[in-house]
Image (cartoon, rainbow, N blue to C red; front, side):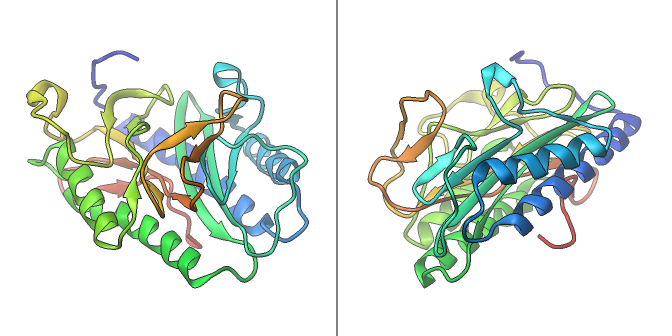
Length: 259
């Protein structure tokens, strides 16, 4: 990934809106499919078919060898769960991460959703994770730095007794799924300098994606070299949207009406 931050033109932002609309729709399709007994592979097929019928390309499929169109992570799985034969059960929380490429631009978004009746603790984790995104993008405006977004996310999450994952972060997004800059969901541990913590500019497009664990923030990667789980086995949640920095409020490019 290049260190150069690519500022999009108004026309490119419009193309990203179109890609974002398909991506948000795919997330909605997956959310609606979360029922007891459905396999993660079945959810992935629904997402794949929706993206293709929309004239787009499933961005995740084949990315660095990833074998599916959707990352589906359940309970203690944080991110990068591989769809397969596993079935969703009542009481599970299911994280859906999806990307779609349309007209050369990428949309990327994620969300965590309950299956049936889940515990109050699980509901709270989902709600806090989602709200932490909105707390963070209060600072996604001209004059602020990337670290301001991460600090707001971390402060909100930790105020509820949860932890923010440190080993994975958000990112720039545009013609590529992963562009500069990295977008941490936490405060920098040391002074990183302005080069590593740029001020936000109109035309920047970034994916802000808090990954939150009910217990400690440390993670492990399973033997499949993809699936990330909480080290302590506690529940995890993920929420993400692609946003555009404007002269005013940030624009969420992957927001669906039902999420």
